[in-house]
Image 1 (cartoon, rainbow, N blue to C red):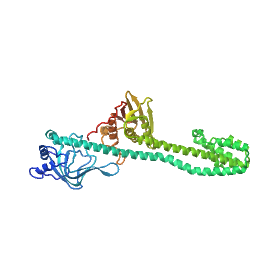
Image 2: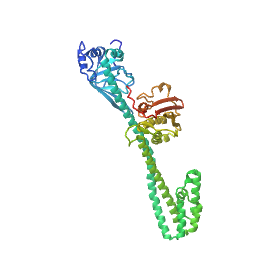
Image 3: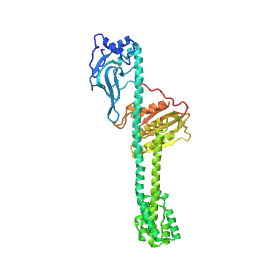
Length: 491
């Protein structure tokens, strides 16, 4: 064992007895490695370090490269990590499991500290011994590779689950913000509607008492028909709207009528000439009630249209979320419209773009064909990439999204004018748990999830970045077998 690094915190003995027979016997009963030949187990004992940990001691720390294969003999070791909502347990190992660095693993540092939750006994083998172990212990190596694949599947499933929860949180926050505006508008209009209806009823009673002739009622109906929302009003400047309101107020005051009707009348298509004709047709005693009736009718129509627009907006948002999540469809491969998926994603993330005053330009090729895919998974790709682009740009920034056909592939490019990805971290952006965002704002799983999902669809993911322009491009085949799932990568 000379020349090997010392364990970070452990109690070491050559074996539990002089010749290591007790360790060999325990390895022979080991759930993972017990099926290996005795000579291979003896090699592990001869080349391993026996360690013990007390409850609460840290076996490996986040950020430090893992260098030891850990063969758990007894106790309970658990990995913990902070994924934005406080430290929580990710996975645990007990006697009979193997953990730490495994042969043929890509290595790296653990996502969080591993801590003893029960007193632990383990046999640790340093990575420097792996080449000899692979040669001398083929059965042990095969068993460890199987364990590594199981661990890769677990972490892939766990990471995808966590990323889906984060995406769900973004979706809920964006949807709540988007729904708040039309819901608040509908509530406000409903409250004002009661007041407008009461005013209209009072005016109707006054007109009934005036006993107008048929010709006078026809003139009143003609003016009322013009009191719907005025399409021209949206094109008027604030100064023009103020001048129009002042003109109506002056007309009312000149005839001794309540100027409170000026603002409602100014927002309709009623003109001063129409009011002059109404004043000429009606007796002075009925003119005030007639004007109030016209103004109240305009308010009621305007509020009705605004409530209708608000309810329509809520319906569109719900439809967008339903399309974004594919909540009414099984997770199977089917012809998927990339344009619809991106549009639904932008509907969900629209509040974030408006909050930052970001301009989002969207361009589609007219001949864009569907791709065989899981729509929900593709939408998760668009959500992560567009959300990252919105995070990257500053206020008044620009995000450009382009979807086009290149021979037998659909290519989606998402470009932002942010500061770019520093060259020193560009090679790490697809690593799980790597993030440049503050704690609580990102798990470092978004781009790793994008990479995995694009690979599952046999697509290609590329990134180019320089200050002022970062481009992520996703290329998907339109062939019938384009989306056959790829096997999970070892971790």
